[in-house]
Image (cartoon, rainbow over all chains, first blue to last red):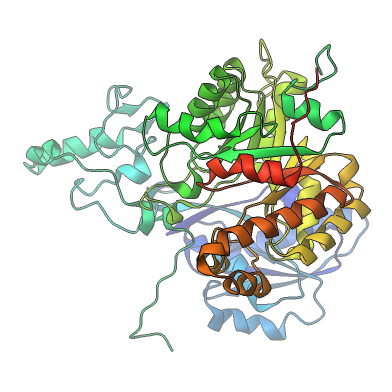
Length: 222
Length: 313
């Protein structure tokens, strides 16, 4: 999933300061799962904003709505009836959702209320970790199901570097060495031989190296 | 600023500061470690120009490093304008290269974003773009004028660099271009070299806007000229080179003469442009990019009436 964290309240308050009526929009997908921008968080931010404005003797009208998926134009369309009379939209979705709202409603300013972080997985309750950088040419089949691009600090493809120790990365004892994990995993699978094959310089065109990406499925495109 | 009152004391800075109409050239380093080849390309420019731009892996094709080629020019008694792109270096390498360039006696630097690697011979590569060209200008200025790195740490001996930036008056949205130029000047660009100009009408408008905005009093703008070698080259540039504005009339004009005479017609157009730039308000000089035509520069300089080049002490 795409993970996110709520922005500091102060920053959100600063964005909406000039306005009197806002629409606060959550998303029922990834940001709900990582407890950053779902219905519950929309309610919390709404109350916090209202309190902050009241303290300053100002009134802020907030409409709340949580879409099924904010990155999908079909659902974003739901906002068209709610947006009338609104000065600004505050989106609690990931950057994809924020941009989809901005694309649909050209004359209303849209502000993000979360910082989109990474594609990751939940390690345990309340902890998410980066797992994928969307390089567009998955290597997991040769690296034992552990991604060195997302999880090695240097993105080494023939690691580990000389800085790893006790299974940890040189940048922090809190970061696992991805290549240590890969090696352990290959050993467990009896595939140590695979490590002897040098992975050549990667073609990054399928990733961000090729510029902004797009998928076109001829069989589905209208 | 140093005791002499110059920022870097480069020949280009002295010429511009003295109010002379500047004339700069360009030289693309070879696709190899061949110093002899580099010399062949740079020698024709001796005494013809005030500084020679040394391109940095232009069009994202790997060549001898621009810093090394610039240093070879310094050793040969020529003045380089070291080009640096943001595509291939993060801020650590950028600042290190600025110090290195200064240590090697390089006194001019042109700050560029860099062509995307998709256009070059290593499209599989990642790009860096840790900072952009405007930030690069600001970094170079901060290092030189404040003696500090981007992180505010002190530099023991600041680099001496005359800072240049590029401007494309023809990129879209074109009304926005003068504002981008203003940002580059605010960031610290001492001089500007423009993209190759072919659409004179558009360029006149751009310069008027720059003069009206007061930009020409804050920096030195050198107008970019690349003589067309043929109608084919004009066609190619019109169709395939990003950000290039080649009017149909120019292509027609080149097509209108015998193939053998097209290069001469291209030079004639360039000379007409240079004559107009000499008179144009706000234009401080010409940057001649004679691509793979370095040996024709002496003839063009002679016919443009820009010789001999001024000597300023």
